[in-house]
Length: 327
Image (tube, helix red, strand yellow):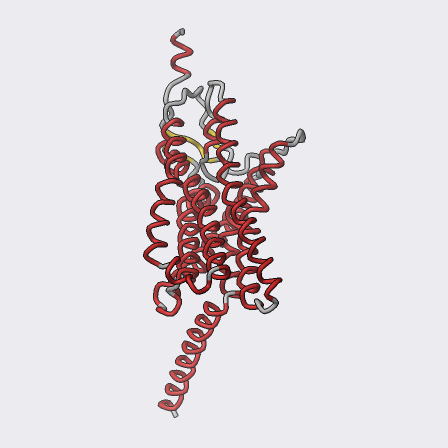
């Protein structure tokens, strides 16, 4: 191998986070503001759900603990990815270290996988609650739930860790532009001067496995649950709870399955459209899920309403006291 070839295959120290490659600078403030609002809303909404469940003892049940874990996962994902792309469009801070990029690769895939397993855990919780209601408290407990989550964290870290470590050993040809809103395995592979066909197929197969395995169990469990509710004829409350979870699952899975299906089609979408789809199916569930919980989960909704009413009553009383003193 000649020296020029070897120099071209040097290690990358920094990458440039491009975001939308064809976006005019005129729209940079608009895009950064939109992403900033998404992040702030996700921070506030998911933080509210987590705080309610942590601080209110009557919400510290396995079903709500699972919701809190999902909110924490979504919030961590957004915190790891969104500030950098916002800074890229807001301040022009497009460069990031390659180590930082690999850090994103690990957490993006780990947390994305973790979400799928949490949704499966949510389906298991509802299955036991409806199919084995008398044994629910002995089968599902917060302590057992914590152990299962620790196992999930370990299992969902294996593939992302392998991906990040293998990406660190790839030979690159001076390409440093990341055509995405954050680093993931696919966009890092695009920087390589090696033939990455096998790695791409492997990544795609693993992604489908991670998505479809929990989804298959979720569909199977909810078919049984809905059949039991239908046969019993008096499961209105259980059906309402299940539809809430199904909405969360649909928000997570439908855009992802669409994106993976689009990759298999002969028609190739532009890079900007692919980045837009990535942002939509990644960040929109993080915004939608807390809204679904607060609007459709009765205990969370009532708790939030009571806190707001108490706060408003306190404010009104304070204002009345101030006016009384002035008079």
